[in-house]
Image (tube, rainbow, N blue to C red; front, side):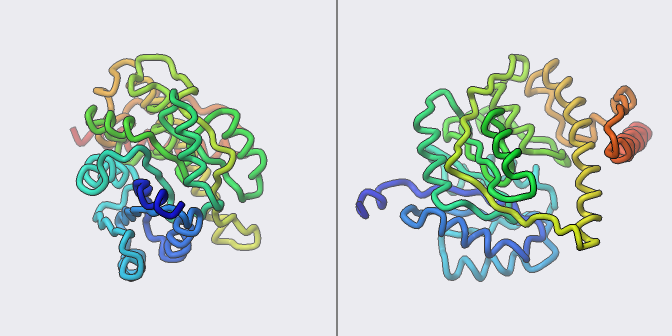
Amino acid sequence: MQGENETKAAFPVMVLAHNEERHIEACLDSIFQADPGRSFDVYVMANGCTDRTEAIVRDYALRQPSVHLVSIALGDKCNAWNVFIHETVQACCPGRPIYFFVDGDARFVPGSFSAMEKALAADPVANAVGAPPASGRSAEHDRRELLEERGLVANLYALRGRFVERLIAARARIPLGLEGDDGLIGALVRWDLDPQHPMDSRFITPCADAGFIFESMTPARLADWRAYWKRMIRYARRRYEFALLGERLRAQGLAGMPQHIQELYAGANKLRLTWDGIYTLTSWIALTQMRRIGRERGGAH
């Protein structure tokens, strides 16, 4: 059995990390502990870090040489994802049958990576594997929703190697500054890289035997309430950005992908604010910000 494990290719794992000094070591530990019978090549995409994240990863790599620090000056998770797909994969881990993507503040249910590999192998139509949350106040609801709707969440998902090769060949990059990179990646999978065709959820297979754990909000902490408020504004902006981006991609295909999502903000004036209970305010803030940026960018030209 040991010899059989040794012949298997190491699992390549991209870890997105921006100022994750509190979580990155636990995240890395969790990767290796999740599937101790498998080897990993872990690439920490440290983007725009101003804390000790990079130093922690360097120290970790001294103990575990299969961990690699990729230092990126720009603090943008979409750019970091693009760098991994178009630079790191080709230079360091080309031709793998599966690629894993995780967030640097997540930890993982034991057996997650091997379970996702099996799920992808069992579904020849699928190009991606989604994993549900295993923690959080609404974990059961979120888990059921992801498994039923076949979604992708940035904390833990995987792409088939051939699909990654097609991303590279198509020079497909996600826009800088985009909220909800996982939402666009999931859409690209469902579109099979052709946004002018209908989405097909069969291209994503869910894996109930995998899962991720993250630090939940503590209601007693004021800082967590501030973070929650900002997150709700980001979620609203994500919804509006996808309305603009989806329209562009359906009309122009991948050729219509902007380099930066704010290139589309001039169109925010045609978006409408709708009633959403207490979240109407965060939607209004997000839409107002987008319209202001759109006007400023228009004036700059």
